[in-house]
Length: 338
Image (cartoon, rainbow, N blue to C red):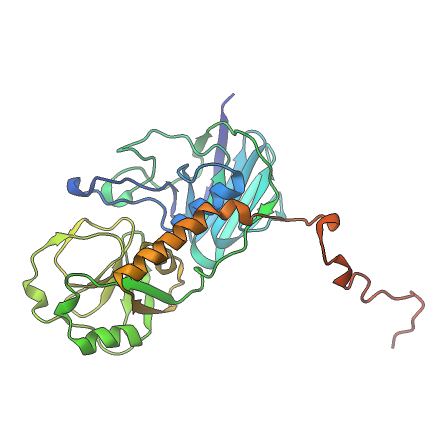
């Protein structure tokens, strides 16, 4: 019998996502894939499997799921309220979902995009080398209640591990590098773009995020004479009314608005995970600094398995056990209270 996960209830924007499609920009298909790629790596580390395997990406809200047999799962990305048969489960951790049990994932508490990982990965027919839904390109679709997903065989492993969260769900500094169109903006405009808090608009999705300036919009000199050319996730376009838009993972592949800069891939998840209304501050870094930042992030992802911690600590392995107040608050039982 094949391993399956059934969706009894589902949020409005739950899709299957992996690392996306590379090499199809010339055909008009952007990379797509998970809005928070680090969350894929975290789930892979928690389950001991490659980070290329697809998971469920849940924007804002999850759903209710049932496994056909015992299944190892992991929950990463934006923290959401989650229970298994009514018992709360820890986020950014791995768990056992027993056969027939109901996994309920509610609204996001912190962040926007949460991820449900299944040991073995979700099975599906690849299109252009990926099973990821790319709704803007007409590839795949959002999940619906009643859908049954096939799950690949699990190579085995433990559950009950968690990873400490980094600050990308609440971090407000976004690093970027200059675009070849950055010189079209006057120095005072570039300085103002970095000094002002830009507010994330509620109009945000996997294609782009609108930013609302604290004062007036931004303008490029001769910006209306730009010829459309290729664009990519992370590019920050300034529209005709001066509004910045950060292009996200399902962005179009060509555009004619001037770009004031490009967000580092590492920090694109910060833009995606920021809540509507959150203030974001952008800062230019040099290309050399950007390379160092991306290399450091790659090393961090590669070392995630060494950062795993048990959900329940073994007292025999707690070196400073005696420093804990293990009996603080104990009473005799015969005290009188007013």
